[in-house]
Amino acid sequence: MNLIVLTVIASLFYSLSTMHVVSKLFDKQGPNQKKTLLLSTVAILLHLAVIVNSIFTESGQDLSFANVALLICWLIVVSVTTVSLRFPATLLLPVVYGFAAILLIASLFIPHHVILQSVNFEFGLVSHISLAFMAYCVLIIATLYAIQFYFINRRLKQKDMSIVTSHLPPLMLVERQLFHLVSMGSLLLTFALATGFLFIDNMFDKGYIHKTVLSLLAWALFVTVAWGHKYRGWRGKSSVITTICAATLLTLAYFGSRFVQEIILGKF
Image 1 (cartoon, rainbow, N blue to C red):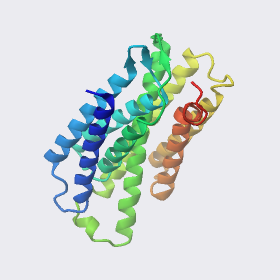
Image 2 (image 1 turned 135 degrees about the vertical axis):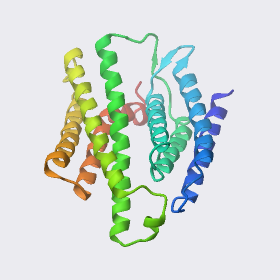
Image 3 (image 1 turned 90 degrees about the horizontal axis):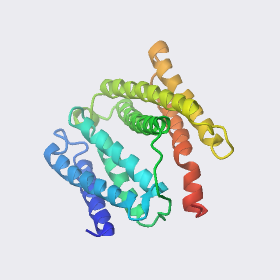
Image 4 (image 1 turned 135 degrees about the horizontal axis):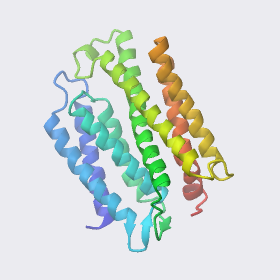
């Protein structure tokens, strides 16, 4: 199937999933889980097909900004969808599905020109990249939980009774999952940074120092949130804002320079 057609259809199914969940957002019964799972599964499989066909080309492996973003987005979508089978994630699903739909369409207009003839499979480098990917996915999901926590908490403080009768998860459950994810993501990010310093020689070179510094700042904020919650009982708005700031710094570390070079400046 043509890659453009495949991308459009995948985006369409993500959009249908988003609309279905949003239409039942404050319904007591919530969205139909079977319908949501069916639509999202089709979208996820098509999304995977887009990634495989985009990365593995006849010329080599295309690891451009767009393809890496699509891959990480797919990992986040799969993770949130899997979590939703056990825990209510009504607010998270339309966010990740909607973003995936937009990113897929955007990828059609973003240049793909970073072709690698061969990939370096050194243990240290692979370990660092794998841990960094996992840490980013977990911490972005934690950030989504932070936003969900803030939304539910704000509606409760406003005495909005529709939030009580809706299908949205209990505030304490969201809070528990939020700080569990922040702790787990912080640990993964710690290992990712450690393997980077251990196996990669150019972490502080001119072309990479901004990534290293931003990652360390993000790590410090995430660790502070996890430590503060466990030992000082921190919670609420300050923890949410700190988590969002840390996720922003980490996103800039991972994608900032590549976005500027590949998308704005057109350097490959």
